Image (cartoon, rainbow, N blue to C red):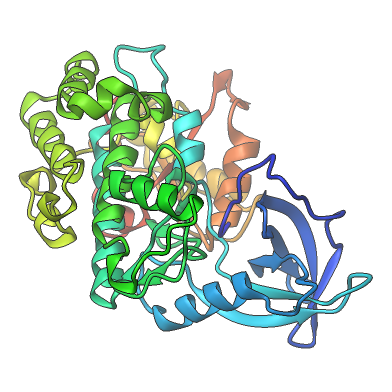
Length: 423
């Protein structure tokens, strides 16, 4: 999926289109991924090859023909293409299939779950800790900082960083930034209202208020890249704590002493986590949430934090939440089958035959020794196949055993590195 507009937006599109004609080829709409005030996003697949999937961001028809939102996002995306942590723009086209005015569209890389989805599906306080693992927080933080480093060096401010605009790429195994509709060149801010409530830096809050009051701002008085660091600090704090902080950051207590609230959130949610990495993460987040923009850390200094020098293993929940082309099947094979060569070869053949029912299998591995002893690792040709296999295999029984199916990092699998995952 690419961008996801907030559901319940003020103005909605009419019924979703059934087809798009893109560069002379018909693409079928499979689902609506998100909807905002100015655009909707759809998952589409090529009529010629159903496995060829992408996202279309269709902007609402502009009666004046200005198409500002479309032109803005297109120009920014075309200017910043080529970074692995920024959504790929495949092309632009005009859709003539709707009744009435033609609509402008962006054809984008199809991404997967957003950090917003992950927050909804996190442990949420039912276990010994709330929020996400340090492995996941670190992975997301590093990927977003890498994207922002590139963006800021190109002179751009994202200006709408929030969980819904950070998405996981199942095939590239990284998080990517999407939705550049509010982005602007630093020192040349052409957007009056920036950032989303709950992730809005204090200086953006002030500027938005002045704009709403009709106060004209000089071109040089706009917000800087520091607003992105504030937003990222809030996102990481939500991921660590498992708590949505919109009401907290709007409170007077936060305005009076945000550092004390950060300390309290860390003290409350640090159980079962190693103390030193937690300490480093807390200090990193606090350096992003300083009220004075010039005092906040930059992306470069943030990436030098000791928090990024600590290796973590993923929790089993992480490997369920983040799709990859590799599937890992647990609770299937008894140790006794691993040491009889004939039985072992039969199991390999049976598992490959079963797994090929769900997609194209590239390789299959069943380690005979730890780490990974008795687990089945299946590499599919793409993440769509592995997701379908995970959906259909989870909960099935083989020889009276319930199958547990998680994903597994393709990069680690290809290096022969098998995590002893934290349960």
